[in-house]
Length: 260
Ligand code: T3D
Image (cartoon, rainbow, N blue to C red; front, side, top):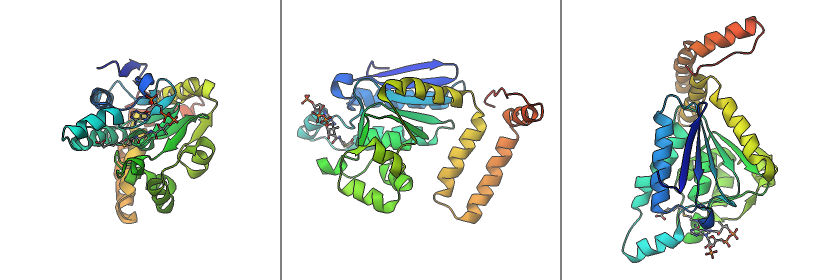
């Protein structure tokens, strides 16, 4: 993998770090390839039970590298990167059967914000901010943002944030539901690691089922969603972790989950 994305696995947690701090973690082609491949690797590795996505430097990710993009446009290139990179990256985050935590260490713009919105849990430094950014460069939403943003903040607020891009600071992001938790910048790495490690040691089958049922119910009827819940509850109920959790409850001890 390119140095622009760091990938490390320890104790069931895969940490994926965008590592172009001098470019505010802008997404050039090499970075997009590496990020897509890292997330796919984490998704398909059964020893990985949770993923932590973050950035090095003062930005989380400012989206498409516009300095590279201007050259691609000048050479007559198009928007192939949406199908080649942005869609697979957003899909990997949103659908891998394990929780993804976004530790938003700084500004998240365009597709960078889209990746954070696709995650299952967002913890942000108090110095971070979000902007949809797309309209500023005469583009529409990608990286799943039309889907995620309206579900996070509601249709009307998503309209406003997409049509009139602006910097949303963490206090507002928290009240809008764009982030789950805000911590002092100095504490972000440790706090995010604690959350992500806890998820990596948790009942992975149940987390995957929660993730799948929420996505399913977003576009199905109540009747269909109830049937899906029954299917997923059967899956979670058949897991070793469910048996362990119930036994631990009865025996008044902490459960030890194996992720299966
Ligand atoms: O094919 C396709 O392209 C389709 C896919 C699109 C996906 C997308 O993500 S489109 C959206 C792309 N992103 C943006 O439009 C964000 C542009 N950046 C900004 O609006 C601002 O820079 C920020 C709000 C993110 C941060 O503002 P601020 O004041 O903290 O920093 P700054 O001074 O504007 O930028 C600092 C440097 O980062 C500067 O470089 P310099 O002048 O020091 O050499 C700036 O050019 C660079 N930078 C910021 N964003 C990008 C970038 N360089 C390349 N690409 C960027 N996206």
